[in-house]
Length: 107
Image (tube, rainbow, N blue to C red; front, side, top):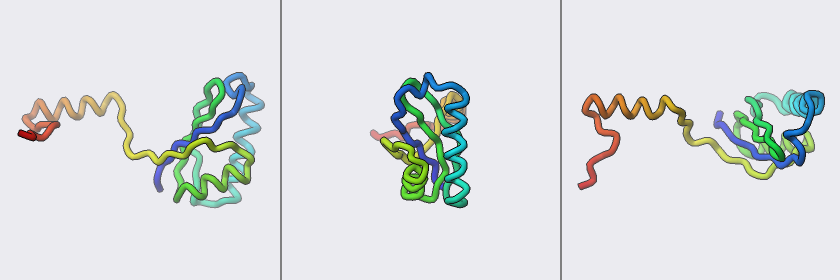
């Protein structure tokens, strides 16, 4: 299933205590059980006034349905096209050190 990032504006999210965050998680889990296997919550990042969630889902519509049923805001849904990390740079460095160019010659 495709991976998505969901941006949600939740004023004061970063100041919520563990009980408030657990209540949000419990509501989300309840809705996810009802929706079935076409949507899975991976994890979320809580910042000052936003919660950014990572989901696996069949499509954006099922993510929007989860938000509607749970009463969660949705500011944006972005499909993840690629994942990079520090090891990504190492992969390119190894390829170029073996004579394999990371950049095609465009001359």
